[in-house]
Each structure stands twice: as structure tokens, then as C-alpha cells.
Image (cartoon, rainbow, N blue to C red; front, side):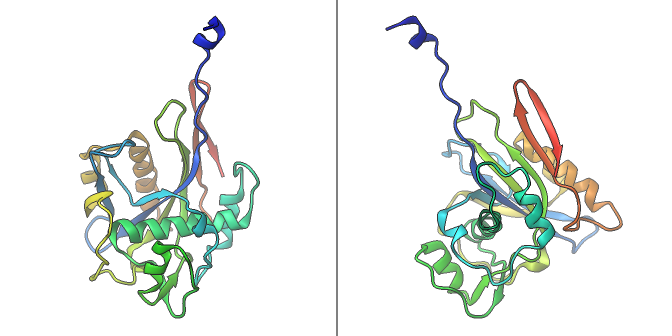
Length: 238
């Protein structure tokens, strides 16, 4: 084999669009967030505690929500979007966050009423609850791209919403997946004691600072965009 072939570095995986939803419960002395432990069999972040979320599916960009994202949130999603920026892709990110939350913990983030027909099994099940996806309560907290060299790479948008957006808080649908084991509500201090991915700890730190502000987190707040360039971690404000 030629020497150049032996020393050639493997091509870095291209990050895939993904979305996460951080639900915040304010029914006690301190805010709580919903987290779950990833199954130990997963190749990506096994055994780590994370928020509900996952990659964007094609159907997420095709199914129409009952209520769209706030215009300010959409604008930040489109800003510095990889590839060809589009409002459709931005909406798909919000839809992915809602769908993944439904699939992993059984919560419906939706508005009651007629829902569009979809060939997607996940969206069909969601719509059978009598709701269409409601993206209006989602705020954008942060964006982060998994560094090169990892077994999976994602360009993840971290959305935040008050737990009041949940349509079925007392009767979650039983998930058909075991991707998140025993999801439960924890304070940020309790979350810090869990086995967290590094980026999740960074996101919690930013969330805590915003929740302490009098105006809390709004759709107009700046979004932190974090990614690796060379050997350095970069921070950009969207």
C-alpha cells in the first residue's frame, strides 16, 4: 500500500441537524428540568443524562405545525445555518424537538384540533392524540456542533420551553422506545451531580444564568453557538 494511503486521515463525519427540548418546571422553590439517562447500549453518549432530543427526520420538515415558531427564533435558526438556509429547515428543527420529546418521554407539545395527514409513523401517533405540534412556546437557548473524531456528530439546537406547554402533563403517552431510561425532573444543582456530557453542563450553566434574570428567557435573547475550529472551542452569538 502506498505510504500516502497509510497516513491519510479519515474524513471527518458531517454533522447532522438535531434538536433538543429543555422543559422547565417552576412549581417549587427552584426551577426543575426534565432529563433522562441514555441506554448503556447506545454508541453515542451511553449512560449519560441528557434532555429529550435527536436528529431531524425528513418528515419534520414536511409536516405543518398547528402553531409556528416565533419569528425571532426562526431568524436565529436561519443565521449561519450550514448548507442552504431555509425557513423550512428552521421549522423542521422545532418539529424535531417536539417529536423527539413525544417519542422519548410521551409528552405532547401541541394545540388541540385537526392535524395534517402524514406517512410518518411518529407524527401519525402524535396526531392521534388530537393535537398538532405547537412550536410557539419554544425559545432558542444554544447551538453546538459535536467536535470531529466522535462516532456521531450533530449540529444541535437547544430549545427551551416552560412545562406549561405540555398538553398531557399527568398522562404521558407510554414511549415505544427505551432511548431515555426513567426520565425525571431535577433541579439544576441535582443535574450537576449526574453523569452529564460536557456540553450539557455548559448548556445548564447558561440556562441557570438566564433563569435568574428578571425577564427570564425570551425569544429575543441571544443564542450561543459553540463549535470546534482547529484545536480551539469557538463561541459565536446569534
